[in-house]
Image (cartoon, rainbow, N blue to C red; front, side, top):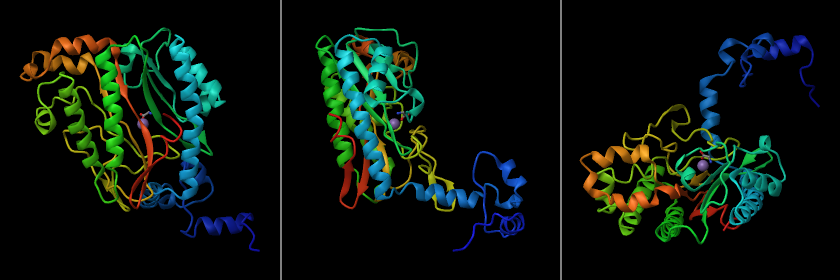
Length: 334
Ligand code: GLY
Ligand code: MN
């Protein structure tokens, strides 16, 4: 068997061969080991690896699905704690206890929001409130380094009936969007479809006066759904390569109307990404419309009634298959 080049001379020769590259957090260490400067963090190699990381092997998909099954235990416990009137912090602890880990083992900090806190997209604040009527929980788990990323929105019987209808409506929209996943389609098309469906949902609920394409063109859905529909998922929660143009690199920037979309690449078999539409009541984003040209397209009384409910997000992880997709989350989390 060939020996690893542990001899300093052999290592030196290999380091200088041009066949060794260093990728990592400490380029100085690579220099110390004699790796040529052009082979430290070479962009062409990074681009190639980032591109290919979008296609998950069956092993990687199994890890992400197991991470979903593990997170499901946490989501179930969190929901029970919420129904019993627990505080955001207690819900977080119930989640950790059920998953069987500590904070640092999670793929990202849990986002546990009661009521109006659901409108703060990455809320990880004080967590003191209890007895909420609405719980938005965004939390995952890790298996062999791979993460799941799952969001659910639950309500108690005391929540506003129109809000509960919106939750059910967005859940339906989320599953319809999952059903639209198919190889060859640009992810952007899915994101646009989300805006159209959310427009119809808001219109049906009487919150805006127009539906479909007309509402989207007028920008009426943007204050309610200000983030991208989803992102690649893997070792990193927002996995790499979502906006990459080709295996050689380059940027496929999102269009100006959807600046926060992280995934602009075409959908292809074996990619794993999230589908996470949302509807939020964020005063900062609604305010410009209250006085602007579009103000008559909104029913402000109905909107103001729902402001204390915060927001809704439903998020699943899916793998793209030849015929469409397989949902890695739904079999485990209701
Ligand atoms: N779950 C966190 C995020 O997608 O940003
Ligand atoms: Mn996500």
